[in-house]
Image (tube, rainbow, N blue to C red; front, side, top):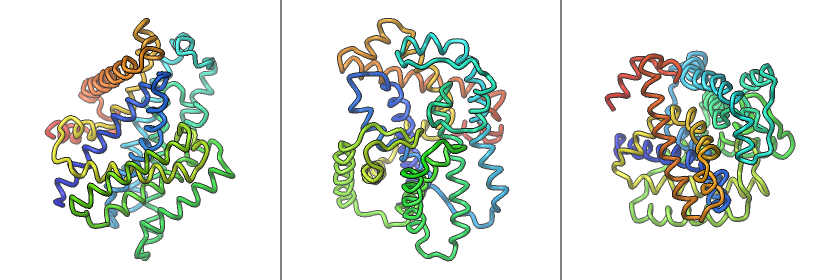
Length: 356
């Protein structure tokens, strides 16, 4: 497969992944869609790490410190900016919104404590409740840094991607079963997600099968992923919570990721998803705020989203996911025109993206 086409379908897959994240959050309080929510939770977060591993290109010339600085600018600046900014609407409106959602949570009045949780960088136990999807960014930062170090330490290993994926599969499981607590930057979750990261990189090194064989693999793996997920509950990667079984989660997610990877390799072009795939961070850091308003402050619409007919719940959730994505991208267009650094970008990178 040609490199340009390969990158294009991966962009499309990444756009699909960020859409699933937003849609999954939009149905979080929809009582008739708990089954769909459970299925999406079984793979949509690992899918991001899998894609990142697939796209990983080992640059032996880039030293560790410059690499960390580059990734910190791209990942941690948006995290800290939006985690801190999100505290403003949270402290102004959170109590009323939580009552509307019926979460039973109470708003902390300790601003100093909230600031500390931002710098601790863990979403475990809803400590980033002001904008919970932000937990992903510090965890992702740890994953790419650990991956960089791991590749340097195993440079003489012939099958290092396979070795590292199995290594972190075991280490992540040990931490999950025996030391599962809220570590800084979601370290406990990062260890598990590293398995999917290296799995993606390993899959990239395999030859792409013929279309007929690829179709068979796609159907088989997606079916297995769906069936296996039925033996587990709703997954929360943010809390490093894999419900009934860590192994069931690993198996269902692995089959689903391989299936969706091969499925989207058939895609030649999808402008909308490809665009979303190039703007995942702007969507990730903002989308939850409009979603919370839709879920709690639109009167009868919010009520129907939670308890209406299943088709109404699905339709409203889909519409609200689309609107939230549009609003996130509008915010990105406006803010990045003047302060692209807030999204971890330079003006030069902005100009390059606008031409894409």
